[in-house]
Structure formats: C-alpha cells, structure tokens
Image 1: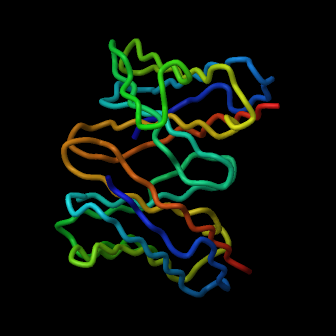
Image 2 (image 1 turned 45 degrees about the horizontal axis):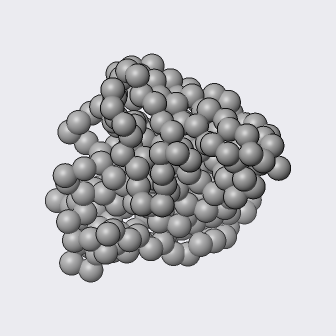
Length: 112
Length: 115
C-alpha cells in the first residue's frame, strides 16, 4: 500500500527565513497531494494542495512543488512568521477511493 | 467548506469503560471518516463511516472495538469500547464534501485520556 515519508521531523527557523519540508510517496497511482497545518488543540487544516498534472502551485507565502518521476513533493514557506509555528502534515491519495495516507508530520518552530 | 462539530472535545475515562464520540456536520457530505492521532504521532485512518450500512474498517481496527454509526448524511458516532491506556489519543472526524475531489475537512478532535 501507499507509504508517505516526511522530513524533517522538527524544523526551527528564524522569523523571516524560509522553511522547506519534503515528502516522498511510494504509490505511483497517487495523484493528489495535500498539506495540512495543525495547531495545538485543533484539527488539521488544509493549507495548500497539488494534483499530479501540475508541477508547482503557489498561494501567497506558501508553495508546493511536485516531482512525479522522483515521487517527491515539498512545501515551501517564505518569510516565516511566529504564527506559522505548528505541525505540518503532507499526504497522498489516489483515484478509485478517498483513502488519504499522511506523513509523520513536521513540527515547525519560528523564532521571533 | 463544511463546519464539523465533535463532542466531547476531551474526556478522562476509566479503564474498561466505553465512550461514544459524536460528529455533526452542518451540510450533507459524501464521505465521513474517523482518524486516530496518538500523542505526537500522525493520523491513522480507523474506518470509513457508510451511511445506512456497516463501516469499512482499516487493517488493525475492528468493529467490536470501534463500533461506528452513520444514520444520515450529516451525523456519525464512533465508540471506543473497553478502553485501555493505549487508547489514549485524539480521535478526529473528517469529511469529503464533493465526490469530485479528495479534500478532507477535519473536526477539532476529541482528546481521550484513559487511566
């Protein structure tokens, strides 16, 4: 079955710096790759997603890239702010069902 | 997007007891799911809640331990039965609104601590 690996598990950056989180997936049939942000005491919230027919997508300070050949996708956060501090999960899912497999999560600390 | 309400938000339970978590959505949804998030861990799918029929369980999860109901398109319950400390987790209800997309929306979760 699908497996999603996520790195790093913890990331600490200075406010204003960029943060990059990387994921790999195993199932070549996966075609949808969402990223979720989970703040303390809350459920995960979708922040950006990308489908397999697109190589890159950007929304203000966040962007996601996808390399289908290498089965890699990454989240890029620029100009980080303290409110970006949270746990970020990458995920993958495919056609034929709605089962979504999540990465292990990255705890991001943005130091003011 | 859908608004999901989960109850209880947190509870402390005694070993051997059972607890039912409720998930109410403010609109009819295509799919409803229950996830478990153990402390400091990722999200693991327990089951898909099927409207009017038995839930579809993932490997490692069984109906006797996690009975699920979904009487209509906006409501589901998850029961954690005969609890042990290993069941201490956050349990999350999640929905897919549109059948044309796999976008999951999550509730705030129910944090259970089993003593």
